Length: 502
Image (cartoon, rainbow, N blue to C red):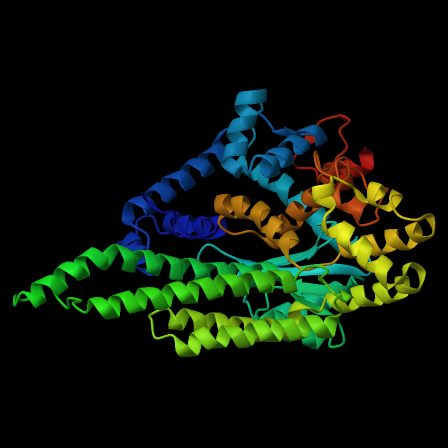
């Protein structure tokens, strides 16, 4: 299967222009092929397309293309909803509605919308949010798109790139967000060095949390690698038995570097089984320690006690890594380093919860606080929602219980909001190969106005959940493309005047 050349449309247009300008220059195609790493047939195909486009632009005088606001809405809808390229948009318009539009006209519509989207992103920011920070790399890994997403509403407040993934890029992005008026009370990330350094520079006194999912995912990966190693050893047991039998019979073992010590083989299997069992137990303890609330005989554990439990997990994890001699020792040491580096920010979310719990304790008492926590942890088993749980409590507890449950439900422990945004960006990145800042902003505006069709937030958009209740549900209306049809005009007139006319 062939792979597309990792170049942008602008670069291909420039190379095609060079080939047309030096049409009769000997060796031009060969030199360009060697320089940019593209085959000669591909360059000839690009040259033919460029020549055809010029002929279509200057020799086709069938009529002037007319662009209306309604047609602009169709173009932008196809661009984002169907992940279409400009060429696909051209084909869809011609086959579905009979509209014949050039690539240049489509590009002009998209460019105008991108400028409006960039302006929208600079003028719409809510204050005091919890933010998820992460990057998604480009196709050729030469840079990445840096993203800032609201953890509560999943709205995108900053998306820039492609940029180098370093502390300087993240610092500039956060400073620019602050200049636009974006404020936050907490950030959560995967703990990368560049992100951590930027957060400490921009907000040294802020609450910077570590994403739990990445840590647990790494733990699961190591566990599965050891389990796969164990299965391999167990499947190799009959071979080792045959080699040991040949050696006992005075014959030479077969194969290169054969294993003939059956006792050592069984000892390695037993050692790996014991390590895997311990790792599974420690993983469950870690998951319990990172839960929103942890109950024991003394009630809800506070941050110092939970930090001690986390340190115990790290100490117990060191023992298999130091004592085991099997080949999984390197994996265990890597996991140990991963947990040790993340230890300081894994329980950052607990301190605000402790403050709320201490404020509610005089109202409900220690036993009442434990009872509410016990019921909240088992709300799925009891098939209770928040109102049903609160209704089962004494009347004097209900107001405080609502505050307490809201704090538990909104505790930020993962950067899943930005990972969801990455799943939206990735298909567009596959189509366009490289996303400009304007296209990223256009995609963010579309996402922020998109109304959830199912779930607990059904009927609301990320902007509504961010407190912008007056935000329209149609992202094109927000950019100045109302659905009402108006008189068609030529593309020679700027589309910026269409919004005023509407």
